[in-house]
Structures are given as C-alpha cells and as structure tokens.
Image 1 (cartoon, rainbow, N blue to C red):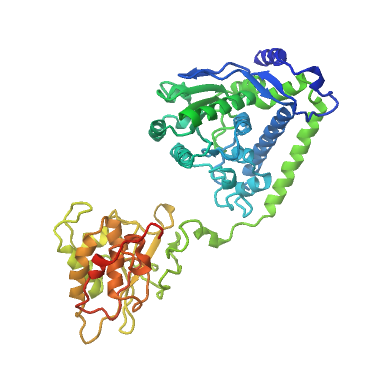
Image 2 (cartoon, one colour; image 1 turned 90 degrees about the vertical axis):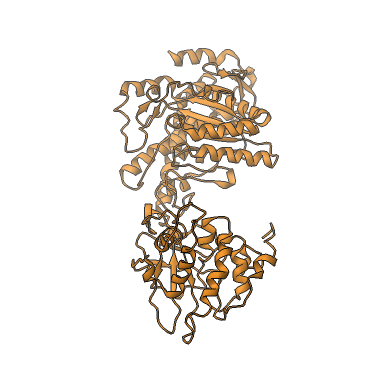
Length: 588
C-alpha cells in the first residue's frame, strides 16, 4: 500500500521530458529533478523543511549504488562472522542505509560525524573503502584502525569521522565537543552525533544537549530510532518515544529514515539551522533487519512477519529502485548488472583483506599513551616491558613488581623510603581525602603498590609504584584488562659510613613543598619517573617537584616531572629553587 502510494507521488513534479534518459542507458545526467518525500516531516518548535527535494538522475543512481554496496557488505560480514573470521562484537546496519547515504549527500567532509558501534556503513559513506573495512572487521593491519578497533571502532580522521564508540551514548558529549571546536574556530560546519533509541534515555545526552543549547553550538543530535534497544521495544523503555521532542527547548524534526531523499532534505535543513541557531534533534524513523548484534537472532522479541513487512513496504533500496524505474533512469537488467558488479567488488575486497597480516604484538602497546613521556607498559601476563624515559632507562628488569612480589608494609621498605614515609605519616591530616594517615595507608593510597627490588651494597635500591592507583585497593597492572603505566624512581645509594646523613634533611625539606602542591596525584607521581642517580642537582629536583621551569625535564607538570636525587645531596642545599624559579611558559 505504501509502495503504491509512493509511486503515485513520484511523478507529481517531473523534470522536462528532454532531460530524461532513455531506458536502454543508465543516466549520468545532472539536470535537476524534484521529487516529493514519502511522508511529511513532523516538527517540534521549528517550521519543517519543504517536502520537495531537488536531486539529479546521477545522484539517485549513486544512492542506489552506495546503499547496495553497504547492504552487500553487511551480508558478507554476517557470513565472515559465522565463519569465525570476525570475532567479538559485530553490529550490522542493513535496513538503515538511507540514513548514512542521505546524511552524507547533504553535508561536506568538513562537517564531522561521530556515531555508536553500528558504524561500518557510516565509514563507507565518509569515503572509506571496502578493503580497509573488511580488514578492520577481521583485525588485520590494513584496517582503518590498524586492526586494533574491530567492528565498533572504525575511524577516518581525514574525513572528520570520529568513529564508532562501544559505550552507549558516550559519543554524544564528544560530538558536542567537536561542535564546540567548530564554533571556536569560526568554521561554517556542523557535527552530527548519532545514537540509537536505546541510548536516548542516557543522562549524559541531556547534559551535552543543555550546554550545546546554552552556547548555541552547531550540534545535530541524530536519533536512529530502529524501534528496539537491543531486544527491548521503544514503548517498553521510554515513557515518551517521541525522541525528536526530547530536547524540550531544543527544536526537533521527525524524518522517515527509510527515505534517502527525506534524510538528505532533513540533514541539509538541520545543518543550516545548527550553524545559525544552535543544536537541533533529528529522529530518523528506521529499522534494522539483523538482530542487535550477531549474537542476537533478532526474532525473539519481534515476529518474522514484522521484518518481512518492513522489507516489502519500506526498504530504502527498493524505494530507490522503483524511483529509478519510474523515471526511466535505468532498466531492471542494468540495475541487476550493477548489483552483480557490486557483489564481485565485495568478494575481491574480502580476498585482499585476508591477505593483510595480523598486527604485530608490539602494536599492543602503541596508541595508548602520548609519545615521549617515558612510561612503561604492562600486559595481563605482568611481564615488564621497558620503555625509555627522558632521563634514563630501567636498570632493573627483574623488579619485585614484575615478579609479582608486591609488598606494602613499612617494615619491608628500604630505610630511606621508610623514613620518607614516616615523615609524611607525621602530618595530622591528608588534604586530599581528609583522613588521618599512617605508614600503611600512605603506601596504599599514595604509592598504590610499593615493590622493593633486591638491595645490594654496590647498587641503589629501586622503588616501583603504580601512580594510577589511589583507591587503596588491591588493583594491579592487569586490573580490568587495562594496560597501566608504572614509573620507577631510582634512589641514590647512601654513604656506608654515614647511612643516615642527608635523609632527615630530605624529609624536612621536601615534605612542605610536596604538601604544598595542588593534588594527591601531583604529590605521588612527582617522584615517579625512572632515572639514574647523579644526573641532576637537588635544586632542580625541588624545582621539578614544585612545577617550576628550571626543574628537571622542564617540569611541565608536577605529576610528569622526572625528579632525581643526586648522590651528592647533602644538608644545607636550600630549597630556594621552588620560590625563585619561574613556572613554565604556556609554549612549554
């Protein structure tokens, strides 16, 4: 019924007969063609755009081609997943192709897009290719994220596509941040932040929308309403499933997300509105044919008749096919030939993607931290990987921490560290959490986990600490499966004849300066970089702890300063560097 109504409406406004191409040749004409959308737009506190969409025969055929490529790609991904060539999570987009293609037709590559985990087709629409798509899905080096992102984390920075995100709704605040950057730079562009109806009840979405409205950011929030959040129907999860009205004080527009021309018209309207007036919400009424992910058959919470009914009445590709045939832009045989060519193109891309090797194991530790800050990374096997610091290299590859021999009681510490800890324990209150501290709480809350390497008379001891852990719990480098950084501070050897000389001064000199810094993290990790003794004088250590420009490594932050206590440290070295040295410049 709906398809018949569409065909009755299609010829309402026709291009001149001279611009139409004979059915025996596929059209590449750029002559304007005006077509009415399938259903009217429904708006909230804004006048809706016109239903008459200006397009061209060439553009309509491009829509058919691009959506067909996406459909075939997703079907192929289904087969690869079942063959166990794609592992982990995999969320397919078939049925929703009109949203990706119509949105791209309305904007430019200077506009930004960020979406959730159903991201394969958005990547293709932004200019991605099939080989990098399948390579990423299969975890190969040729993938768009070097094989390390997988299905949920596609990315294409040169096209301002900031990826898929696995945390429900988390991409929306990031999208509003992209919009803030565009306004700050005075760019005439906007950001489209896509999310599903299952994420529409997230609190972070409303917080981001509120600040975007206050600052009139060019942010377009696009709710891809496929009517099921995983296996939960929208009416079971939302008291008001009119998502385009959810902005309250922010305008909204409901769009037939299965009509590529309607999506194009709505996105063009939304971009113009957002740049001039601030955010707007678009609700795309769409549908997914697959389940939520490959682990979901998609038939336990909806009927097969419902799925087949949408395919017959609203399928976005079939709508465009009927449009092409109604305007004699191509013959049925020519469209079939195009689909055969697309199938071959997809198969060839899969073959090339399979030839790409898996990422090297060293890639596990890249793209985790900013380069040049001297951190050491640990994997779940707790084996130590030594990374070069600004001031030196680890000299103890067999630390107690790497062997799993973690100690925290004060009696297990070396005398120098024990005295330093005792100096801090004399402070009545710890400003960070307003709780009295003792030796053991200090080692747990501040240092996290303290390990004592074997001590020999000829070599200084090594103290290791996880500067990321301030919870006081028993977290370790493999906690939650995350890779964490460890920084090692190399203590200088004490003179054998006067083992205690110098350390009381160290306690009294450093304690007030460390307590004067602004955060617990700064106080803890100011000691935290692996260095060799005897390279920097005491004044630069103090300056580094206090965040001064003359401090070691420039002291661009108290927490990142690599502080060294020289063997020559003696009482009488005044901590004047902290007071007299300038703070780093903004260029540093």
